[in-house]
Length: 112
Length: 112
Image (cartoon, chains in turn yellow, purple):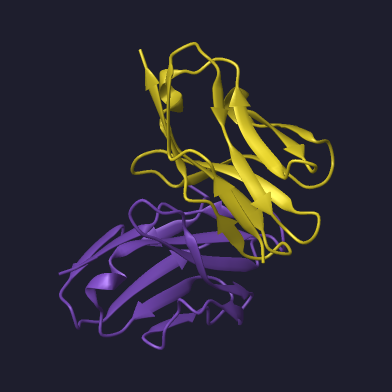
C-alpha cells in the first residue's frame, strides 16, 4: 500500500527566508506524487505534481519539489517565503491513479 | 464559477439524525471522489465513481454511509443515524479519468 510521511507537523520561517517541507513516501511501484495546499476556509489547491517525467517539478507561486528515488523523498521548497504562503501543506501519493493518500499535513507559519 | 461545488457548506445536526450532502463536479469530469478530513489530519478516501458506477469504497464507509451518482453528474453522500464521531469536513473532488483531482470547498459537519 502507498503511504506518505510528513516529517514536520509545524514549520515556522521568517518572511523572505527559504521554505523546506519534508515528505517521505512508500510505494511498491513508481509513484505519482503531489503537493496540495489548504488555506483556512478554502478548498485544497494543487501546488505541483510528479508523474515520472523530470525529477525536479516546478509548481505555482514559486514552489518546487524534487523526486529522489534513492531517498524515497519528495521535499517541497521555496527560495523566499511570503506571508501569503502561511497555510497547511499536504504531501500526497496516488494509488494507481485512483484514490489519493494524504500525509498528516505540515502547518507553515510565516513571521514578519 | 466552473469549479467543484458542494452544498451545504456547513451542517449542524443532532445525533441520530440523517444528513445528505451534495457535490457538483467540474462538468466534463467523469470521476468523482469523496474524502473525509478530521481535525488535525489529512483527508482520507471514502469512495469514488466513474460516471455512475461506484468503483471503490473504503472500509471507513460503514453501512450508515451511502453515496450515489445516479446520472453520472452530481453525487450525494448520505449519513444515517449520525454519531458524534462523524463530525468532520467532507470533501468532494473530480477528475477527468486518472487526471488531476480538483477539490471543492467541503461540507463541515458537526454532530451534537
